[in-house]
Length: 242
Image (cartoon, rainbow, N blue to C red; front, top):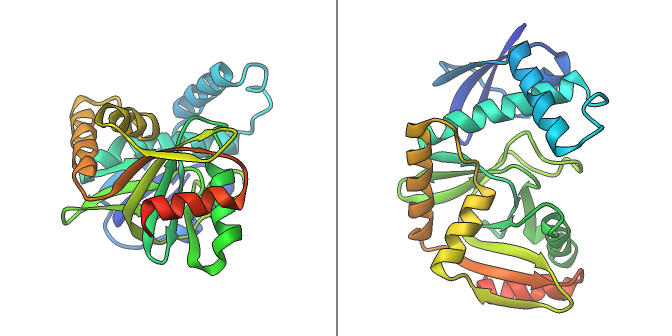
């Protein structure tokens, strides 16, 4: 077992892991210093991930590697402790446009990564990917900030940077581009669908507080129905006011 120090959203964590692949995966977030949390991934955690994977992807659980299961288990462990520090693991695509953070939420297959690609293709070097799959959202000094994490999705798109949250969009595929501000109940739904909800009572309460503070942080919130075209990024940028 190897113990690795990492820093996620400015939170130092020590992870005890079994596989060299995991250590390599975390290298871009390595840090020294005293950890605030110590996490140990055991065989029990790995088997629990295999069971969860089997529920989500029937027939594929036997083929998934133990290295991937360890990474999934470690992400789950991290997600459970982040709320202790006003942070939450997210499922979405996050990028920075000229220093302003955008988080795209939505169900799997909704087109989050595809829409982020439209921004990169249309605006080039103005766009810097923070994380294409599992960014971290943290409240710091009254500000909501997006952070990168090692879990960057199948295309491994991301950077170890942060940016203040400027806009959040709940993405859906559609036959034409249409944006409108999210109503309050829709915003709660968008946040709860993209933010990891921990199992611990205290952590769950902290997560709900994070969601409430995001609502009042000054960011802009939209539902975005879009086609796969650069015009979708153009329409969204205009609506966001970036």
